[in-house]
Image 1: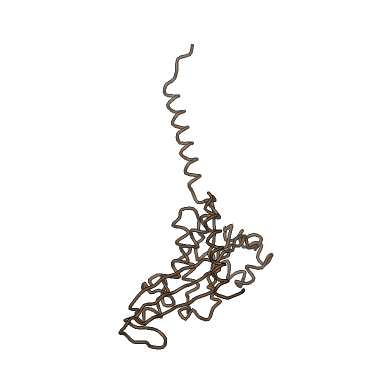
Image 2: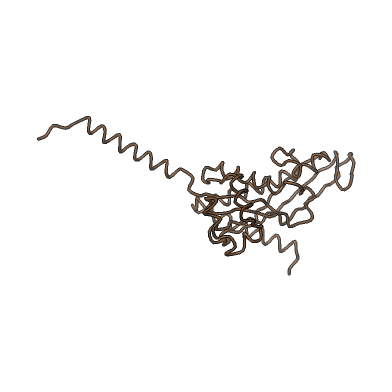
Amino acid sequence: MRPVNRTSMLGAALALALTASGAVMAREAPTMTVAVIDFTNDTSSASWWNGDVGRQLADVLSNELSATGDFKVIERQKIDAVLAEQDLAASSRMRPGSSPHSGNITGAQYLVTGSVAAYTEDTSNTGGGLNIAGFRVGGGKSEAYVAIDLRVIDAETSEVVYARTVEGRSSGGGVNLRGYVSGVGGDFAHAKKTPASKAVRAALIEATDYLDCTMVKRDGCEARYQQKEQRRRENTKKTLDLD
């Protein structure tokens, strides 16, 4: 019988361990490549929407998606270069067949974007403070609600493959007028914790969790979001009094 070469056995075991480790790393590496496009505003009630807010919201969602570890997010510079070259408006990007080659250029499998579909705020007086142009400064409590229509578009076919309305709610007291107005529109990434900015951020976190669930995890979490969507639709019907 040929003697056992322990060195060879050790080498084979090490190679097997490295192969297994590599397989695990491959499984853990982000497999979903996305590009987040600037958001739009479809409501006139979001008084904080101005300037570069659409871009800032896209950047926040990009950061949140990247932080999950499940998405590879295309850099902003590359997206801007491609969109400038192809001169694509948001509406044309969503129309089937409008940009069949954008995925090849950006390297993204999917384009993610959203639009503010609804925004409401309620400022109540709890005593003291001033009310200026509809904004209460001190002595008040403000509540904010935002709904964002989220869309995920196949970068090759321009087909909308996922669509969901996500919501965010927040409240706060003693609102500072300057902070409230610029809390989102001034610089969202460094916004003060106003009800408006907190509601928007809550919606973006909800969007991140939803995308991670439906596009990557798919571990039964979808049922939870179906229930949320059903409740949202029922609440919307009650608000609109469609009976």
